[in-house]
Image (cartoon, rainbow, N blue to C red; front, side, top):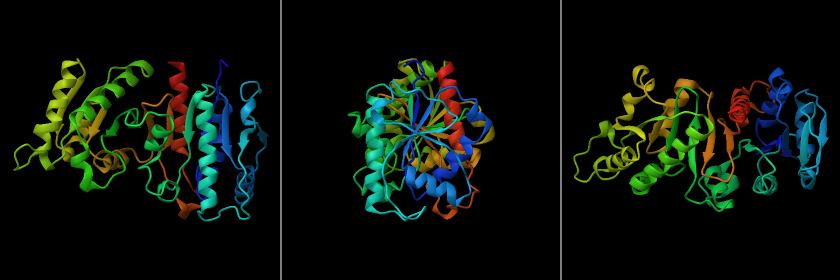
Amino acid sequence: MNNKPIIIVSGEPYSIFSEIFYKVFKSSFYKKYKRPIILIGSKNIIEMQMKKMNYSCKINLIKKNEIKNVKLSNKKINLINVKLNFKKPFNKITNKSSKYIQECFDIAINIMKKKLGFALINGPISKKHFFHGKYNGITEYLAYKTFKKNSEVMLIYNKLLSVCPITTHIPLKDVSKKISSNEILKKIITINKFYKTNLKKIPKFAVTGLNPHCESNFKNNEEDKIIKPAIKQARKKNLKVKGPFPADTLFTKNNKKKFDVVIGMYHDQVITPLKTLYNFNAINITLGLPFIRISPDHGTNNQMLGKKKSDPTSLKDALFFLKKLNEN
């Protein structure tokens, strides 16, 4: 298969994803998209939700074991159907929907493991209901399912500035115990390799401190004990890394132009300013897996269900990014 398809897991049925996907599917961008796209989800749910929003589209059903031999085009929605017999278009989250999402992911991961897909995109899910505390997020879930636990890297990518939190979906009180020089260095090396290999660019990194203003009255603070040694090791490997910088001034207009990637110590430290700067014009890329996984940077957004006001930019950006990746 020279033109491997992009595999999309539709995610939580009680979400805006059907609307988002339809808007992208009907765009001129999608019609010109050369790489085929396969959606994994419930035909029943998709058709009910489309009808509810007065959308119409044709579906091309595909059997999960026939991807290698089937001819695909993007004139119809190419769908691997996973049964979910809800009677309403927007049923609230139940155990049934969690089992359905699990089956969708299992099919997608199996396709990717067999190297039949170019990349994996997933729609939003409710982490609380799907993971039940077993995994911190999809990033960690996919790492576990592909036997790459502790190798995963969350990169929130924007072509002007990207960010990577060293810790992801954990309580703030646990951050200082979870960061280490080795973890910081490992993530910098992984991102650097990704930029060089896939984007044909040598990235410039900025690393934040953990404490306000990178200061602490205590001896052996995290900046001195963990972060500075990691930066020193990265420089020895000829990586373009500077820091640690106070996070409160790092994202100012003049500073952000100097770097390609900001490495932060915790989730909101770097993702909040990125979303403030670029809204939802960013994509969540999981590195360190046997394949590329991308998630549009939005949640289930239950308050907007069926209102036809949701912005499809993030999914379009994910597909555009994969198009550029293919060209490189």
